[in-house]
Length: 149
Image (cartoon, rainbow, N blue to C red; front, side):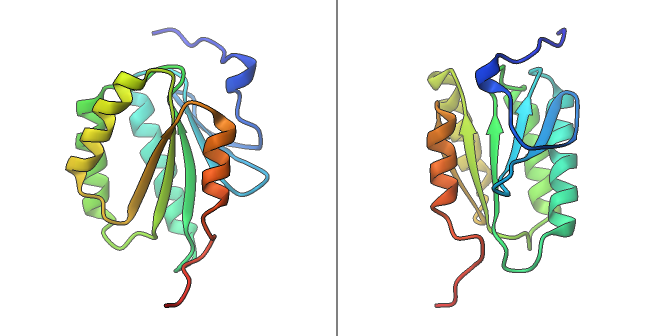
């Protein structure tokens, strides 16, 4: 599939960190924003490579908060689930993570939610949104660090 520039309302704002099939920005508020620019396996591979960099640098107890923006297309779900399962297995002691999925196709997100449930990712909390502002508001409601009980 050929790259098509994102519409103005889907362009992430912040500091560009890399990627072509899955572009990574760090927003000024510290939230990571990944945008799949093409629904391919390469997008999944780039997203997980970006996560490797983030988790290698994050401090213990710090929450990882990010937007996974699939409004331009969802990469192959079976491949994504397989690769995500392998990544989670290799990163069992990862920091608590909060993921806001941005989408345009609600029916595809129902299927994606089922895949996520099957991954049994106990340190990952996900929510689905069709509006960027709602996704950002949810991520802002999460404290940046674990609090003592």
